[in-house]
Image (cartoon, rainbow, N blue to C red; front, side, top):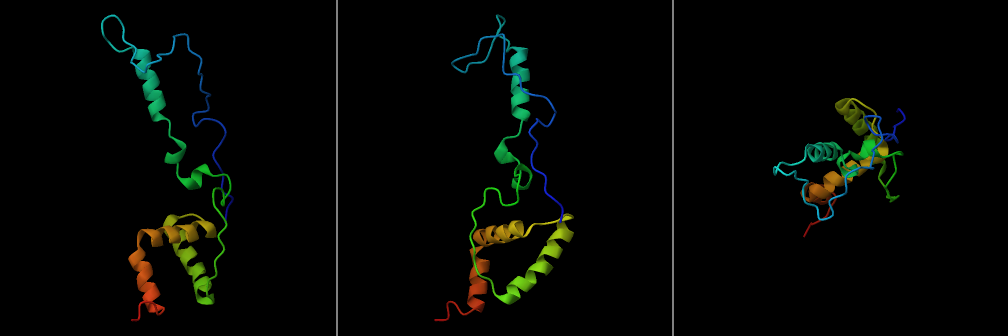
Length: 134
C-alpha cells in the first residue's frame, strides 16, 4: 500500500494569484463596459481564469486530503469474524477494479455510503439475520 500524497501548496500551474490591480474594483458587481457598450476584454479574461479554478469541494476527497483519516470521525463498531475475513477479498477486488491501493478506511466508509443510498439492500441482509420475522 503506497503513501497517499496530499494536495500541494502551490497552484496547479505553479503560479501565485496576483490580487493587486490598477483598475478600481466594481463595488456593485456590474460588468466593466467601455464607451461603445462592449464588455471589457480584461474582465472576460478574469472571468475565464476564475471560472477554470476548481473549488475545494469539486476536488475528490482522496486528492484533497493530506492523511487518510482527515475529516473523519472515529466511529468504532464491531464486526463478526466472517465479515472481517471477507474484507481481504473485498479489498483485493476493489484494488483490481480501480488499479490502485485502497485504504481500509476508504472502502469501509464507501460501503456505508452505499448502504445509506440503498437502504433496501441493508434491509434484505437484516431480514437474513432475523429481522422482520412477524
